[in-house]
Length: 408
Ligand code: FAD
Image (cartoon, rainbow, N blue to C red; front, side, top):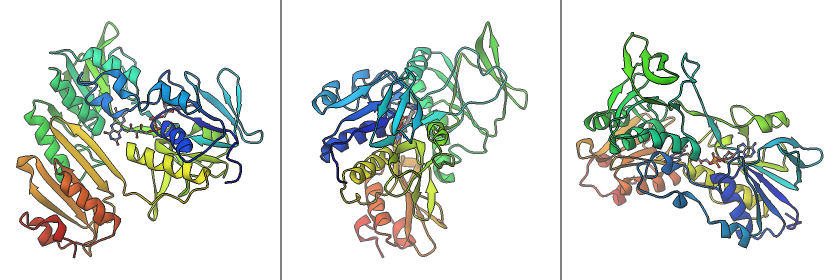
Protein backbone atom coordinates (compact mmCIF):
# COMPACT_ATOMS: atom_id res chain seq x y z
CA UNK A 1 0.00 0.00 0.00
CA UNK A 2 1.22 3.47 -0.95
CA UNK A 3 0.89 5.94 1.90
CA UNK A 4 2.37 4.36 5.02
CA UNK A 5 1.91 7.54 7.05
CA UNK A 6 -1.90 7.63 7.13
CA UNK A 7 -3.81 6.99 10.38
CA UNK A 8 -4.98 3.53 11.38
CA UNK A 9 -7.63 3.02 14.06
CA UNK A 10 -8.16 -0.31 15.81
CA UNK A 11 -11.41 -0.75 17.77
CA UNK A 12 -11.12 -3.43 20.46
CA UNK A 13 -7.99 -3.59 22.63
CA UNK A 14 -8.02 -7.35 23.21
CA UNK A 15 -5.82 -10.14 21.93
CA UNK A 16 -6.37 -9.50 18.22
CA UNK A 17 -6.42 -5.70 18.43
CA UNK A 18 -3.29 -5.55 20.58
CA UNK A 19 -1.46 -7.92 18.24
CA UNK A 20 -2.53 -5.98 15.15
CA UNK A 21 -1.16 -2.71 16.58
CA UNK A 22 2.21 -4.30 17.40
CA UNK A 23 2.45 -6.05 14.02
CA UNK A 24 1.67 -2.88 12.07
CA UNK A 25 4.71 -1.23 13.66
CA UNK A 26 6.81 -4.38 13.18
CA UNK A 27 5.89 -4.38 9.47
CA UNK A 28 6.95 -0.76 9.14
CA UNK A 29 3.77 1.33 9.33
CA UNK A 30 4.88 4.90 10.12
CA UNK A 31 1.54 6.68 10.46
CA UNK A 32 -0.49 7.18 13.67
CA UNK A 33 -1.98 4.04 15.21
CA UNK A 34 -4.81 4.41 17.73
CA UNK A 35 -6.07 1.47 19.78
CA UNK A 36 -9.52 1.99 21.34
CA UNK A 37 -10.78 -0.33 24.08
CA UNK A 38 -13.97 -0.42 26.15
CA UNK A 39 -12.20 -2.05 29.11
CA UNK A 40 -9.90 -0.06 31.42
CA UNK A 41 -7.02 -2.52 30.82
CA UNK A 42 -4.13 -2.75 28.38
CA UNK A 43 -4.57 -5.73 26.00
CA UNK A 44 -4.40 -8.90 28.10
CA UNK A 45 -4.70 -12.67 27.80
CA UNK A 46 -8.06 -14.19 28.69
CA UNK A 47 -7.09 -17.91 28.86
CA UNK A 48 -5.54 -17.69 32.38
CA UNK A 49 -8.80 -16.22 33.74
CA UNK A 50 -10.27 -19.73 33.93
CA UNK A 51 -6.97 -21.49 34.69
CA UNK A 52 -3.70 -20.35 36.33
CA UNK A 53 -4.90 -16.86 37.34
CA UNK A 54 -8.16 -18.18 38.81
CA UNK A 55 -6.19 -20.71 40.87
CA UNK A 56 -3.91 -17.94 42.14
CA UNK A 57 -0.85 -19.39 40.40
CA UNK A 58 -0.06 -16.22 38.50
CA UNK A 59 -0.37 -12.50 39.24
CA UNK A 60 -2.55 -9.99 37.39
CA UNK A 61 0.44 -8.19 35.82
CA UNK A 62 1.42 -11.38 33.98
CA UNK A 63 -1.89 -11.26 32.10
CA UNK A 64 -0.79 -8.23 30.07
CA UNK A 65 0.32 -8.99 26.52
CA UNK A 66 2.84 -6.13 26.60
CA UNK A 67 3.86 -3.58 29.24
CA UNK A 68 2.58 0.00 29.04
CA UNK A 69 6.06 1.16 27.99
CA UNK A 70 5.72 -0.83 24.74
CA UNK A 71 2.84 1.34 23.53
CA UNK A 72 4.68 4.58 24.30
CA UNK A 73 7.89 3.31 22.70
CA UNK A 74 6.01 2.33 19.55
CA UNK A 75 3.85 5.46 19.34
CA UNK A 76 0.62 3.49 19.70
CA UNK A 77 -2.04 5.81 21.14
CA UNK A 78 -4.28 4.10 23.66
CA UNK A 79 -7.83 5.23 24.33
CA UNK A 80 -9.12 2.95 27.09
CA UNK A 81 -12.46 2.81 28.95
CA UNK A 82 -14.11 4.18 25.79
CA UNK A 83 -16.61 2.33 23.63
CA UNK A 84 -16.88 3.09 19.93
CA UNK A 85 -20.57 3.69 19.25
CA UNK A 86 -20.70 4.39 15.53
CA UNK A 87 -18.65 4.02 12.36
CA UNK A 88 -19.08 6.90 9.91
CA UNK A 89 -17.91 5.23 6.69
CA UNK A 90 -18.51 8.28 4.50
CA UNK A 91 -16.40 10.56 6.71
CA UNK A 92 -13.99 7.69 7.58
CA UNK A 93 -14.14 8.19 11.32
CA UNK A 94 -15.16 6.30 14.43
CA UNK A 95 -17.41 8.00 16.99
CA UNK A 96 -16.73 7.26 20.66
CA UNK A 97 -19.18 7.30 23.55
CA UNK A 98 -17.61 10.59 24.63
CA UNK A 99 -18.67 12.05 21.27
CA UNK A 100 -15.04 12.27 20.06
CA UNK A 101 -14.52 11.46 16.37
CA UNK A 102 -11.32 9.64 15.45
CA UNK A 103 -10.37 9.72 11.77
CA UNK A 104 -8.92 6.71 9.97
CA UNK A 105 -7.54 5.77 6.62
CA UNK A 106 -7.82 2.09 7.47
CA UNK A 107 -9.99 0.71 10.30
CA UNK A 108 -9.54 -2.65 12.04
CA UNK A 109 -12.45 -4.06 14.04
CA UNK A 110 -11.28 -6.43 16.79
CA UNK A 111 -14.43 -6.45 18.89
CA UNK A 112 -14.33 -9.95 20.38
CA UNK A 113 -17.44 -11.70 21.61
CA UNK A 114 -20.00 -11.46 24.40
CA UNK A 115 -21.00 -14.38 26.59
CA UNK A 116 -24.45 -15.73 25.97
CA UNK A 117 -26.83 -15.78 28.87
CA UNK A 118 -30.00 -17.77 29.52
CA UNK A 119 -33.55 -16.53 29.67
CA UNK A 120 -34.33 -18.20 33.00
CA UNK A 121 -36.28 -17.16 36.08
CA UNK A 122 -33.69 -16.03 38.64
CA UNK A 123 -30.98 -15.16 36.11
CA UNK A 124 -30.47 -11.72 37.72
CA UNK A 125 -29.89 -13.12 41.24
CA UNK A 126 -26.65 -12.25 42.99
CA UNK A 127 -24.00 -14.95 42.60
CA UNK A 128 -25.03 -15.77 39.02
CA UNK A 129 -21.85 -15.07 37.08
CA UNK A 130 -20.36 -15.25 33.60
CA UNK A 131 -16.70 -15.21 32.57
CA UNK A 132 -15.29 -13.11 29.78
CA UNK A 133 -13.13 -10.39 31.29
CA UNK A 134 -11.00 -9.48 34.31
CA UNK A 135 -13.95 -7.94 36.19
CA UNK A 136 -15.98 -11.18 35.76
CA UNK A 137 -12.96 -13.27 36.81
CA UNK A 138 -12.42 -11.22 39.96
CA UNK A 139 -16.05 -11.77 41.01
CA UNK A 140 -15.73 -15.51 40.38
CA UNK A 141 -12.43 -15.79 42.24
CA UNK A 142 -13.89 -14.00 45.27
CA UNK A 143 -16.72 -16.56 45.39
CA UNK A 144 -14.55 -19.70 45.13
CA UNK A 145 -13.63 -20.32 48.76
CA UNK A 146 -12.98 -23.83 50.14
CA UNK A 147 -16.36 -25.49 50.69
CA UNK A 148 -18.24 -23.04 48.43
CA UNK A 149 -20.78 -24.82 46.23
CA UNK A 150 -20.40 -23.95 42.54
CA UNK A 151 -22.91 -24.91 39.85
CA UNK A 152 -21.44 -24.66 36.36
CA UNK A 153 -24.20 -24.40 33.76
CA UNK A 154 -22.77 -25.59 30.46
CA UNK A 155 -20.14 -28.27 29.93
CA UNK A 156 -17.97 -26.49 27.37
CA UNK A 157 -14.26 -25.70 27.70
CA UNK A 158 -14.61 -22.62 29.89
CA UNK A 159 -17.10 -24.34 32.20
CA UNK A 160 -14.86 -27.39 32.57
CA UNK A 161 -11.72 -25.31 33.12
CA UNK A 162 -13.48 -23.36 35.85
CA UNK A 163 -14.71 -26.65 37.37
CA UNK A 164 -11.11 -27.93 37.51
CA UNK A 165 -9.80 -24.68 39.00
CA UNK A 166 -12.64 -24.55 41.53
CA UNK A 167 -11.81 -28.10 42.70
CA UNK A 168 -8.18 -27.01 43.15
CA UNK A 169 -9.49 -24.17 45.34
CA UNK A 170 -11.50 -26.60 47.46
CA UNK A 171 -14.97 -25.83 46.14
CA UNK A 172 -17.73 -28.42 45.60
CA UNK A 173 -18.68 -28.46 41.93
CA UNK A 174 -21.62 -29.68 39.90
CA UNK A 175 -21.58 -29.34 36.10
CA UNK A 176 -25.03 -29.23 34.48
CA UNK A 177 -25.00 -29.84 30.72
CA UNK A 178 -28.16 -29.81 28.59
CA UNK A 179 -26.80 -32.15 25.88
CA UNK A 180 -26.27 -35.85 26.47
CA UNK A 181 -22.50 -35.39 26.64
CA UNK A 182 -19.92 -32.75 27.56
CA UNK A 183 -18.21 -30.59 24.92
CA UNK A 184 -20.94 -31.55 22.45
CA UNK A 185 -20.10 -28.86 19.86
CA UNK A 186 -16.34 -28.84 20.22
CA UNK A 187 -14.93 -32.32 20.89
CA UNK A 188 -15.38 -35.86 19.64
CA UNK A 189 -17.46 -38.31 21.72
CA UNK A 190 -14.40 -40.30 22.96
CA UNK A 191 -12.63 -37.14 24.11
CA UNK A 192 -15.79 -35.92 25.84
CA UNK A 193 -16.11 -39.30 27.58
CA UNK A 194 -12.50 -39.04 28.78
CA UNK A 195 -13.09 -35.61 30.30
CA UNK A 196 -16.34 -36.71 31.91
CA UNK A 197 -14.57 -39.58 33.64
CA UNK A 198 -11.61 -37.43 34.64
CA UNK A 199 -13.80 -34.74 36.20
CA UNK A 200 -15.82 -37.39 38.04
CA UNK A 201 -12.58 -38.87 39.42
CA UNK A 202 -11.68 -35.40 40.69
CA UNK A 203 -14.95 -35.14 42.56
CA UNK A 204 -17.00 -33.09 40.11
CA UNK A 205 -20.65 -34.09 39.93
CA UNK A 206 -21.23 -34.15 36.15
CA UNK A 207 -24.84 -34.27 35.01
CA UNK A 208 -25.72 -34.41 31.32
CA UNK A 209 -29.19 -34.12 29.81
CA UNK A 210 -29.85 -31.53 32.51
CA UNK A 211 -32.46 -29.01 31.37
CA UNK A 212 -32.50 -26.05 33.72
CA UNK A 213 -35.90 -24.77 34.75
CA UNK A 214 -35.01 -21.90 37.07
CA UNK A 215 -32.43 -20.43 39.38
CA UNK A 216 -33.73 -20.19 42.92
CA UNK A 217 -32.62 -17.61 45.44
CA UNK A 218 -32.74 -16.46 49.03
CA UNK A 219 -32.49 -12.77 49.90
CA UNK A 220 -31.59 -11.92 46.31
CA UNK A 221 -28.71 -14.42 46.05
CA UNK A 222 -28.69 -17.76 44.28
CA UNK A 223 -29.30 -20.80 46.48
CA UNK A 224 -29.90 -23.52 43.90
CA UNK A 225 -30.50 -24.58 40.32
CA UNK A 226 -33.82 -26.30 39.59
CA UNK A 227 -33.51 -29.01 36.93
CA UNK A 228 -36.52 -29.95 34.77
CA UNK A 229 -36.97 -33.32 36.51
CA UNK A 230 -37.66 -31.38 39.72
CA UNK A 231 -34.28 -31.85 41.43
CA UNK A 232 -32.68 -28.85 43.14
CA UNK A 233 -28.88 -28.57 43.01
CA UNK A 234 -28.04 -26.39 46.00
CA UNK A 235 -25.28 -23.86 45.31
CA UNK A 236 -23.80 -20.57 46.53
CA UNK A 237 -22.60 -19.42 43.12
CA UNK A 238 -23.46 -20.34 39.52
CA UNK A 239 -21.38 -19.83 36.40
CA UNK A 240 -23.27 -19.58 33.12
CA UNK A 241 -20.89 -21.01 30.51
CA UNK A 242 -23.05 -21.50 27.44
CA UNK A 243 -20.89 -19.94 24.74
CA UNK A 244 -20.37 -16.51 23.28
CA UNK A 245 -21.72 -14.51 20.34
CA UNK A 246 -19.69 -12.31 17.99
CA UNK A 247 -19.75 -8.58 18.73
CA UNK A 248 -20.81 -7.55 15.25
CA UNK A 249 -23.50 -4.93 15.91
CA UNK A 250 -21.14 -1.96 15.39
CA UNK A 251 -20.29 -3.37 11.94
CA UNK A 252 -23.88 -4.33 11.12
CA UNK A 253 -25.13 -0.85 12.00
CA UNK A 254 -22.51 0.55 9.63
CA UNK A 255 -23.88 -1.59 6.79
CA UNK A 256 -21.02 -4.12 6.71
CA UNK A 257 -22.00 -7.68 5.79
CA UNK A 258 -22.48 -9.85 8.87
CA UNK A 259 -23.91 -13.30 9.47
CA UNK A 260 -23.34 -14.34 13.07
CA UNK A 261 -20.00 -12.52 12.86
CA UNK A 262 -18.46 -9.92 10.56
CA UNK A 263 -17.87 -11.56 7.18
CA UNK A 264 -14.27 -11.25 5.97
CA UNK A 265 -12.13 -12.60 3.14
CA UNK A 266 -8.72 -14.30 3.33
CA UNK A 267 -7.00 -10.96 3.94
CA UNK A 268 -9.59 -10.01 6.65
CA UNK A 269 -11.27 -7.32 4.51
CA UNK A 270 -14.90 -6.75 5.41
CA UNK A 271 -17.40 -5.85 2.67
CA UNK A 272 -15.78 -2.36 2.79
CA UNK A 273 -12.19 -2.77 1.57
CA UNK A 274 -10.96 0.05 3.85
CA UNK A 275 -12.27 -1.79 6.94
CA UNK A 276 -10.75 -5.00 8.30
CA UNK A 277 -12.05 -7.32 11.02
CA UNK A 278 -10.07 -9.84 13.06
CA UNK A 279 -10.52 -12.38 15.86
CA UNK A 280 -13.63 -13.64 17.64
CA UNK A 281 -15.94 -11.05 16.05
CA UNK A 282 -15.50 -12.49 12.53
CA UNK A 283 -16.70 -15.32 10.38
CA UNK A 284 -13.73 -16.17 8.15
CA UNK A 285 -13.16 -18.43 5.16
CA UNK A 286 -11.52 -21.76 6.00
CA UNK A 287 -11.22 -24.23 3.16
CA UNK A 288 -14.62 -24.31 1.49
CA UNK A 289 -16.42 -23.11 4.64
CA UNK A 290 -16.89 -19.91 6.57
CA UNK A 291 -16.25 -20.36 10.26
CA UNK A 292 -16.27 -18.46 13.50
CA UNK A 293 -13.28 -19.49 15.56
CA UNK A 294 -12.80 -18.38 19.14
CA UNK A 295 -9.15 -18.94 19.96
CA UNK A 296 -5.95 -17.07 20.61
CA UNK A 297 -4.12 -18.64 17.61
CA UNK A 298 -6.98 -17.48 15.36
CA UNK A 299 -6.84 -13.94 16.79
CA UNK A 300 -3.08 -13.81 16.19
CA UNK A 301 -3.25 -15.28 12.67
CA UNK A 302 -5.94 -12.82 11.59
CA UNK A 303 -4.06 -9.87 13.12
CA UNK A 304 -1.07 -10.94 11.02
CA UNK A 305 -3.20 -11.16 7.86
CA UNK A 306 -4.66 -7.67 8.39
CA UNK A 307 -1.34 -6.01 9.26
CA UNK A 308 0.41 -7.65 6.27
CA UNK A 309 -2.32 -6.56 3.87
CA UNK A 310 -2.37 -2.97 5.17
CA UNK A 311 1.43 -2.71 4.95
CA UNK A 312 1.48 -4.19 1.43
CA UNK A 313 3.38 -7.32 2.45
CA UNK A 314 2.72 -10.77 0.97
CA UNK A 315 -0.02 -12.66 2.83
CA UNK A 316 1.32 -14.86 5.64
CA UNK A 317 1.25 -18.63 5.05
CA UNK A 318 -2.12 -20.12 6.07
CA UNK A 319 -2.06 -21.79 9.47
CA UNK A 320 -3.80 -24.93 10.65
CA UNK A 321 -6.43 -23.83 13.20
CA UNK A 322 -5.54 -24.96 16.69
CA UNK A 323 -6.65 -24.55 20.27
CA UNK A 324 -5.65 -25.65 23.75
CA UNK A 325 -7.32 -26.18 27.10
CA UNK A 326 -5.79 -26.88 30.53
CA UNK A 327 -7.76 -28.84 33.14
CA UNK A 328 -6.05 -30.32 36.24
CA UNK A 329 -2.71 -31.70 35.02
CA UNK A 330 -4.10 -32.22 31.52
CA UNK A 331 -3.10 -30.18 28.53
CA UNK A 332 -5.43 -30.73 25.60
CA UNK A 333 -4.27 -29.52 22.19
CA UNK A 334 -6.52 -29.69 19.15
CA UNK A 335 -5.42 -29.07 15.57
CA UNK A 336 -7.52 -28.98 12.41
CA UNK A 337 -11.26 -29.45 11.96
CA UNK A 338 -13.17 -32.72 12.25
CA UNK A 339 -15.75 -31.91 9.54
CA UNK A 340 -15.68 -34.66 6.90
CA UNK A 341 -13.86 -37.17 9.08
CA UNK A 342 -15.07 -40.77 8.71
CA UNK A 343 -12.51 -42.59 10.82
CA UNK A 344 -11.20 -41.96 14.29
CA UNK A 345 -8.01 -43.67 15.52
CA UNK A 346 -6.81 -43.54 19.13
CA UNK A 347 -3.05 -43.64 19.64
CA UNK A 348 -2.04 -44.40 23.21
CA UNK A 349 -4.18 -45.40 26.17
CA UNK A 350 -6.77 -42.97 27.61
CA UNK A 351 -6.31 -44.67 31.02
CA UNK A 352 -2.79 -43.21 31.17
CA UNK A 353 -4.14 -39.71 30.40
CA UNK A 354 -1.64 -39.47 27.56
CA UNK A 355 -3.15 -40.29 24.17
CA UNK A 356 -4.32 -38.75 20.93
CA UNK A 357 -7.48 -39.16 18.89
CA UNK A 358 -6.77 -38.73 15.19
CA UNK A 359 -9.60 -37.95 12.76
CA UNK A 360 -9.15 -39.08 9.16
CA UNK A 361 -11.02 -38.63 5.87
CA UNK A 362 -12.06 -41.73 3.92
CA UNK A 363 -8.76 -41.79 1.99
CA UNK A 364 -6.67 -41.53 5.18
CA UNK A 365 -6.03 -37.77 4.93
CA UNK A 366 -5.40 -36.37 8.41
CA UNK A 367 -8.07 -33.76 9.21
CA UNK A 368 -7.74 -33.21 12.94
CA UNK A 369 -6.14 -34.43 16.14
CA UNK A 370 -7.22 -34.15 19.77
CA UNK A 371 -4.04 -34.67 21.79
CA UNK A 372 -4.22 -35.20 25.55
CA UNK A 373 -0.81 -34.72 27.17
CA UNK A 374 0.61 -35.80 23.80
CA UNK A 375 2.50 -32.84 22.32
CA UNK A 376 4.40 -35.02 19.83
CA UNK A 377 1.15 -36.26 18.29
CA UNK A 378 -0.13 -32.68 18.17
CA UNK A 379 2.96 -31.40 16.36
CA UNK A 380 3.10 -34.34 13.94
CA UNK A 381 -0.59 -34.11 13.11
CA UNK A 382 -0.40 -30.35 12.58
CA UNK A 383 2.33 -30.84 9.98
CA UNK A 384 0.42 -33.69 8.30
CA UNK A 385 -2.80 -31.62 8.22
CA UNK A 386 -0.97 -28.65 6.69
CA UNK A 387 0.53 -30.93 4.02
CA UNK A 388 -2.82 -32.73 3.42
CA UNK A 389 -0.94 -35.97 4.03
CA UNK A 390 -2.46 -39.40 4.42
CA UNK A 391 -1.68 -42.04 7.03
CA UNK A 392 -2.50 -45.71 7.33
CA UNK A 393 -4.95 -46.16 10.22
CA UNK A 394 -3.47 -49.51 11.31
CA UNK A 395 0.02 -48.03 11.53
CA UNK A 396 -1.30 -45.00 13.40
CA UNK A 397 -2.96 -47.17 16.05
CA UNK A 398 0.30 -49.07 16.63
CA UNK A 399 2.28 -47.21 19.32
CA UNK A 400 5.49 -49.04 18.31
CA UNK A 401 5.44 -47.18 14.97
CA UNK A 402 7.12 -43.80 15.20
CA UNK A 403 5.14 -40.73 14.17
CA UNK A 404 7.86 -39.85 11.65
CA UNK A 405 7.31 -42.94 9.54
CA UNK A 406 3.52 -42.66 9.49
CA UNK A 407 2.83 -40.65 6.37
CA UNK A 408 1.68 -43.03 3.64
P1 FAD B 1 -11.12 -10.11 22.90
O1 FAD B 1 -9.82 -10.57 23.47
O2 FAD B 1 -12.37 -10.44 23.60
O3 FAD B 1 -11.03 -8.52 22.75
C1 FAD B 1 -12.09 -7.74 22.27
C2 FAD B 1 -12.05 -6.40 23.00
O4 FAD B 1 -12.86 -5.48 22.28
C3 FAD B 1 -12.63 -6.46 24.41
O5 FAD B 1 -11.74 -5.91 25.34
C4 FAD B 1 -13.91 -5.64 24.30
O6 FAD B 1 -14.21 -4.96 25.50
C5 FAD B 1 -13.53 -4.66 23.21
N1 FAD B 1 -14.68 -4.04 22.54
C6 FAD B 1 -15.80 -4.66 22.07
N2 FAD B 1 -16.62 -3.74 21.51
C7 FAD B 1 -16.02 -2.54 21.60
C8 FAD B 1 -16.36 -1.22 21.21
N3 FAD B 1 -17.52 -0.95 20.57
N4 FAD B 1 -15.50 -0.22 21.47
C9 FAD B 1 -14.32 -0.46 22.10
N5 FAD B 1 -13.93 -1.69 22.51
C10 FAD B 1 -14.77 -2.72 22.25
N6 FAD B 1 -8.53 -19.40 23.58
C11 FAD B 1 -7.59 -20.35 23.39
O7 FAD B 1 -7.08 -20.47 22.27
N7 FAD B 1 -7.21 -21.18 24.41
C12 FAD B 1 -7.73 -21.08 25.65
O8 FAD B 1 -7.37 -21.85 26.54
C13 FAD B 1 -8.72 -20.08 25.89
N8 FAD B 1 -9.23 -19.91 27.14
C14 FAD B 1 -10.14 -18.91 27.36
C15 FAD B 1 -10.61 -18.70 28.64
C16 FAD B 1 -11.52 -17.68 28.90
C17 FAD B 1 -12.02 -17.48 30.30
C18 FAD B 1 -11.97 -16.84 27.84
C19 FAD B 1 -12.97 -15.74 28.11
C20 FAD B 1 -11.49 -17.04 26.55
C21 FAD B 1 -10.56 -18.07 26.30
N9 FAD B 1 -10.05 -18.27 25.01
C22 FAD B 1 -9.11 -19.25 24.80
C23 FAD B 1 -10.52 -17.48 23.87
C24 FAD B 1 -9.61 -16.29 23.59
O9 FAD B 1 -9.32 -15.58 24.75
C25 FAD B 1 -10.28 -15.40 22.55
O10 FAD B 1 -10.47 -16.16 21.38
C26 FAD B 1 -9.44 -14.17 22.26
O11 FAD B 1 -9.37 -13.33 23.37
C27 FAD B 1 -10.04 -13.42 21.08
O12 FAD B 1 -9.39 -12.19 20.92
P2 FAD B 1 -10.18 -10.94 20.32
O13 FAD B 1 -9.21 -9.81 20.30
O14 FAD B 1 -10.90 -11.31 19.10
O15 FAD B 1 -11.30 -10.64 21.41
